[in-house]
Amino acid sequence: MELTIFEDYYSFKKENNTLIETLVKKKSKILLRFKAVFIVVDYLFEEMKKRKLSEDEEYIFSTGYDFIYDEFEIIKSVLHEYFKDNINRMEVCSQTVNLLLLIDEVKGEVLNNDSIKKEITKLNELEDKVYDFLSKGEDAPDEYFELVDEITCDIFDKNNIEVNLIEEIFYEIALEYDIYPEDDTNYFNEFMLNQINKMR
Image (cartoon, rainbow, N blue to C red; front, side, top):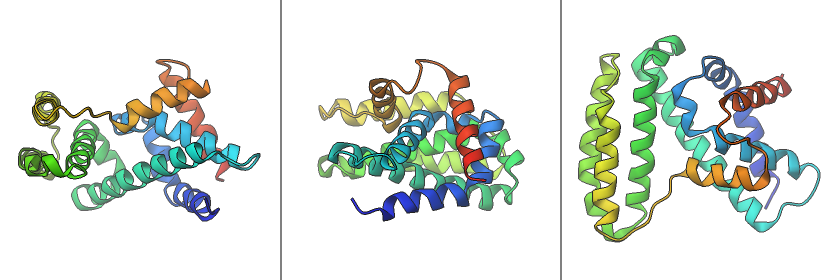
């Protein structure tokens, strides 16, 4: 793997440092989807400086970085279009932003499988409703998370397709590397603030 992807990641972190730091300090629900992903990707970023990563590790890094980048593009778009770049206002609806990101990830899984692409309609309709809540500056009801689960099960289970979300996969990877104490939210916040300070 060329060094450029690591340079790109460094540039991404530097460019988004203020946004990431604010979300971390607020213990934002938006970051629930990123905890293990950030920890693994940052770990491999530091390891890359000391040794050559294996092909599997390069793939893990690339996958994790792509996920973080794509999701943060959505976050920044929502922040700008719906909250006029006011992070505090967006944080009021952090649960709904997290819901939007979840729907986007599930949509990606559906669109990557030709046999179920036609099933995307329900997710699109739910996504539109979530955007409606954001346009009003309101949180979507908790039941919307259950709706995502129901739609996801309906799509994947009936087609005998197993799906694992990125955060779940990277959580297992983090445990394998022994770099993330199980169920330790404070560890994530301390880790991220330490990484943010390195960017200064």
